[in-house]
Every structure is written in structure tokens, then in C-alpha cells.
Length: 146
Image 1 (tube, rainbow, N blue to C red):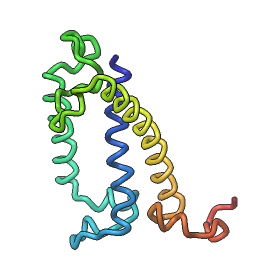
Image 2: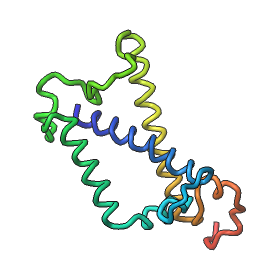
Image 3: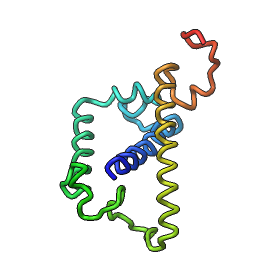
Image 4: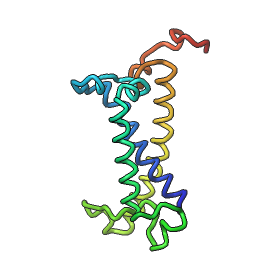
């Protein structure tokens, strides 16, 4: 259960991260720390105080969403299913067959997003460009012998 919970959470984060790698190449916000479309460089443009706030907020969400239970042993004692945070404002969970299909789709899309984000961030390390711009370059122009 704990491993499935971790897989779902990492998949959800990577779905947002993959979107966050692509969108800045098309939409630019007018601030210095949000203007870089290269994900590996943009992370280091955020001030240390901002990163601290982000990490504290993520930790607080993690802490409160699990009902203050942080170990694999205590997290599921009340019968909670992995990934079920009791947040369904649109009512997708009313039909059990559809819910099972949505849960499987979320798991598969999360796995794909984990691979996609890994590829995008490593491509950014190698090329020094965002994922869309990196797809438009010639591999012979890179400083590495391929």
C-alpha cells in the first residue's frame, strides 16, 4: 500500500512537472524568476527563501493530507486506499466502474509522466534548452560526441 501511495504521489507531481516544463516555452510571466524556459536553470533562479516556502508547503500538505500519519504502518490502518485523499469535488467516484477506470488511467499516466519528466530534465541538462527547443536542434551541434 505504501509503495502504491508513493507511486501515485510521484506520478501526480510529475504530471504537473511535465506540464511545468513545457508551458514556460510558450507563456512567459513578466518576472525575473519566472522568465527562463529552461527547467534546469529556472529552478536556480528562484530565491532560497522561495524554495524554502515551497518545500515547507509541500511538507505541510503531505502531513495534513495523511491525517498526521506518516509511516507506512500507520497510514492505512483506518482502511484508506492508496491515493485516496477524500477529495472528489466533481463526483467522479460515484460510479465504481468508472472510478476503477479513472484510477487505472491516473496510474498509467503518472508512470508515463515520471518518464517524460525525467527525459525532459535530462535533455535540458544536455542541451541547455527547454524540451520544445531541444527537439528542434541538430544533434551534431551539441558539444558531446554522439
